Image (tube, rainbow, N blue to C red; front, top):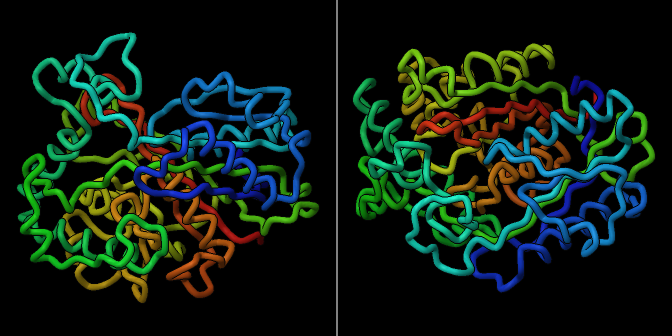
Amino acid sequence: MTSGATVVGLGMSPQGRRLGISSRELRRQAIDAALLDAGLCRTQIDTCICFGVQPEDLRYAGLSPRMSFALNSGGASPALSVVVAAALIATGRAEYVLSVYGEAFTGDAPRMEPHHDGADRSDIGGYSYGYPYLYGLVGPAAVYAMAARRYLDTFGATSEDLAAVAVVERAYGAVRPGAVGYGRPITVSEHQASRMIVDPLRLLDCSRPTDGGVAVVLTSAERAADCAGDPVEVLGSGCGHNIANWWDGTMPGRFGAAPDAARLAFGEAGIGPDDISVAQLYAPFTIATLMQLEEYGFCGPGEAPDFVRAGHTGPTGSLPTNTGGGQHSGFYATGFTPLSEGILQMRGTAPTHQVPDAEVCLVSGSGGNGGVQGSWAHVTLVLGRPR
């Protein structure tokens, strides 16, 4: 269903901490930039996909689509919006689809309140993970820490293996202007000296919330020829959900790419892991990078630490990964972090660490907890230069 869907516009507001810009204004700035990039006017956008409920955004941004709706699957939402947009375009329901995100996360400090229906984005209750919240499982770090502990114990890996991921991603971010890690590379020793957050995850294993907006515009391959923006084709997509792994007890051992999302995306694109030029993974914690490298078939079970240490995910490796610093050392715009960098890489316009002659990019997204810790949805996109 994604065959022929093409990204023609990418817009990004400033990204960072404590920018002093409202969420709504961040979204408007991203929309303006995406439309300018695509060479489209506001009246050509007939469908808007937003995240959360933002009833005033259409008026504030001057948009008048035929259709507008909110989509919420956590960090999987941006990649999922591409899947939805592709279906709308393929079935003739839409011509130009705008997908937009923007949050000012680093404003008010979270309040320690229990989860309830009236909780807003500043409530710590928004970070609860289903019924385990009743037993003290609060926040995504606790969920990822369980997966990390299982992985380390199962494969004999260590905290230094997590550190290797953090060092590589910070090296990317350290030279990317505007990244949270810009100008601040780290070493394994510095990682090991950082304080423990949730065993075995240390401070430098964790991403931090940032403010920022991102918007993308999609249309058909035929209409893309009339747009100003360099086209990026959606070659394949796949969706899966980790809730199924709750029933067989394997949830902490999987990230969600297998068995469905990766298989479907690779199948639709007609490629395999060896054909991927560059990977942009949804990885707010270092363990997520290791687990996805294995689930996507880039290396075998337990082999990801050696894969990273051998330099494969670095700029001269076989699979440059999270080349803008990722969510860990670049910026945190949920699943728009990997999606935006994937688009830049396929356009050949990444401001730093552009992968030479990159033809195919893997983008992943995870989120939308299903009421049980770790039961996130997972979406895989395969992006490419037009064939």
